[in-house]
Length: 119
Image 1 (spheres, one colour):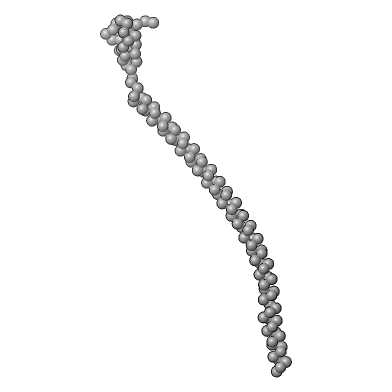
Image 2 (tube, helix red, strand yellow; image 1 turned 90 degrees about the horizontal axis):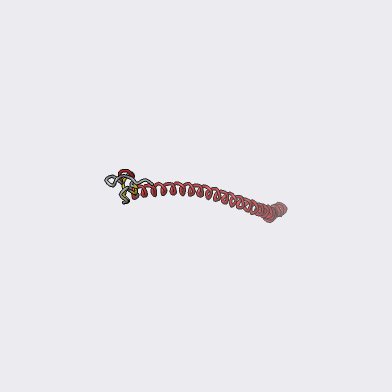
């Protein structure tokens, strides 16, 4: 019986103290490998995030450039419309009687003034 008790105690001691030591070493190696792997993954994720930001910036730049062109074109059209609205459709002419008159055409400007003077 004592022999059985000693044998059981020895087996329990080996199992209790021997296996955790081996497990501890295995965990340290795994933790180190996990840390290295995590570092590599973090670096990879950072690069991908940078690339995505770069692509987004390019797309934004293209959109802004396109919008600026459209705005410039619209502003030019609006300016021309204002100019056409403000500018009178008249011309001035030197008439035969020596006066300068204005009208839609040089001929109509000098009606009643002897016509347009020759140069």
